[in-house]
Image (cartoon, rainbow, N blue to C red; front, side):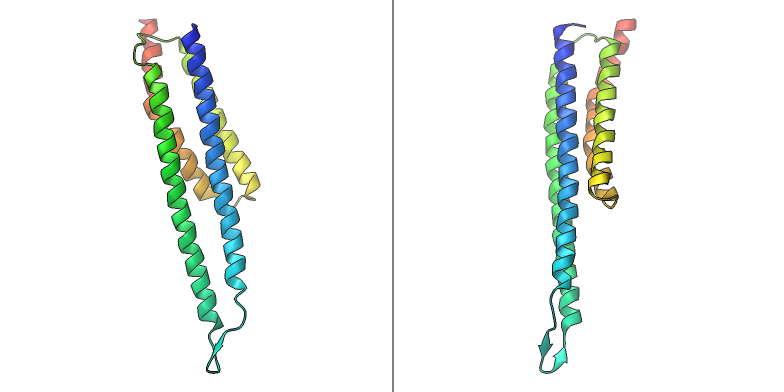
Length: 165
């Protein structure tokens, strides 16, 4: 393997770790926000207007508002992870533009690095959120994992197959 192959492997590892850490941080942030929002919504106290107890309506309103904020946060995190993934993939793909072929070992190493970063990201997030952030972490991880796999690893595999022919 040449120097460009090592640079691509290092950059693949750095981008995978960055995207994995970011998706974990986003999921943990959503978990903490949801935990605090549900505590805040339940702490409205007793609200009486003209002698009528309207506390349940205000508590329900608090839960609805916190749910909307969680949804907005989820969408914002998805957009940021999507943009970060596109930038990372385009930078990695730009390094492959002039390559005629790559070493098959580079493809295998890159694939294991990306999968390892994804697995570690999911495990750390599940532990930090006490196994309650399953849907967000799967969504956040799949975004960058699919981009790296479909745009970068597929091209790397095609180029590694050319060396054998």
